[in-house]
Length: 198
Image 1: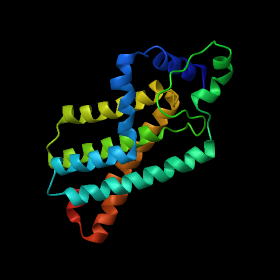
Image 2: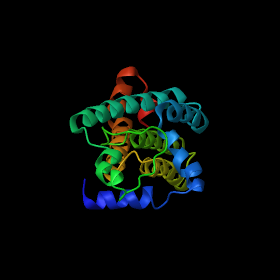
Image 3: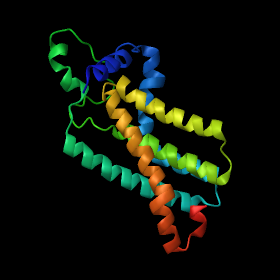
Image 4: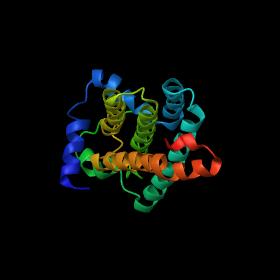
């Protein structure tokens, strides 16, 4: 990682640290856990468009699987150190303080899985909202704002560098849009779900 990566990490992780921010910024990271994020996304899809619910769920599942596989392949290939590993000598010498919430992680930093999950969900929700005409541009902006909050929370919790969350956002959002407008539409024709590609 670059000096800018390190500087931005410290500015967010250490610079924003407070007991108040722990509650809204730190705990926002849980929305990036699949076992929390995906059930909430399923409920949101039910509200957004009950008629096309099963079709939208199929998109979410495919996007989650595609993005998850790509994420794990990249993580294992890169095997990048986490901030606690990178800053270990400075932490030991008392030159750097890293604020950590939840589990202390040391490897497989790139890309951020929580961010990938958040942006996968955000992209599918936004796509479903556009199809149903029930979520306007401000609503879509709000969805991606929540995903961005999850991404920043990963830095705040001491788990990732900015480059990790940027890669996670691109991977999650990109793979989801690919599924929405590419592979899923092709499969929809095979399954006879013509409305899926509208």
